[in-house]
Image 1 (tube, helix red, strand yellow):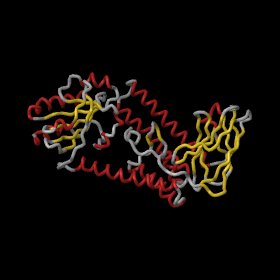
Image 2 (image 1 turned 180 degrees about the vertical axis):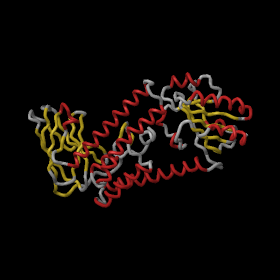
Image 3 (image 1 turned 60 degrees about the vertical axis):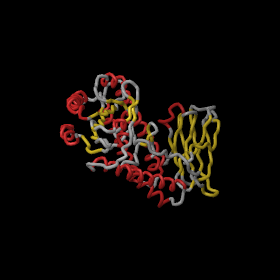
Length: 386
């Protein structure tokens, strides 16, 4: 993904207390599940501590069931489960929820009757499934060679933006509602679709955290959401500070440049810092992209001209196809390594890489002295530093 599914942020459902319930009040879940006679139906709480089984029943032939539980202080999320089929719903008052579904077509037929809140939650589920299918299709096309990594990134971003556009309207319509909370924490392949490290996405977390803190003060879920959002803000500010250094400061004294250690074509790992004492071009590329042959031809000319003066290239490939990369890189005279995480790597965000190819020129002392996006100016930069 362009943000690549938001990249390595804390998981929501960890380390918190169970929700406080309203003393003496209960809510009731009743309904009918057809085509499920003899199956066990579970009622489970999707708490901050994880999924907790609250009750279960073996369905009779008519499929009817009733569960009763203590009413929570704030909107809470529950699920009905038969085997590995799960359907999520929300409850936040001493109410009765009427549910119907056909077990043979679980996801398309599960309905909470006369519940606009749960209608929106089902809509969010449908949008997430649609996005997940779109991403799976793109991944299969990219693995089959029908599209390259750059096309994959661009189309992946479009799929995610479709989800975000629809969900943003829902969130801003009622940020204190259960659907808004539920929507912003949806994941695909274990990554949050809304990335709290992104300034635009962070606004959604902030709107919900503020609304929940106002409407449901001192509840565990509100406290957890507020803490999650503040931690995300701190992380984003650190990343922005790093990006500002990498992008705007022409000479960085004593950077303590983070080392990169990746495998080369022969499988042996080479560290970026092992090249200290040379002028290094740290080059981020994708070999399967259309630009790659011409790009490497230009570098080949520069490498031949400056190598004897202490110039080295540390070129990182983000190709998903390892065999293609090895074949393409086998005869290159400089150091070429590959990040096996491909475009999902954290290196791209660490170095604030907004387009590929991008490079950084590092002097003999190990300091970044130039960001290179226009490679036509590389020769001039090398003349200056060498």
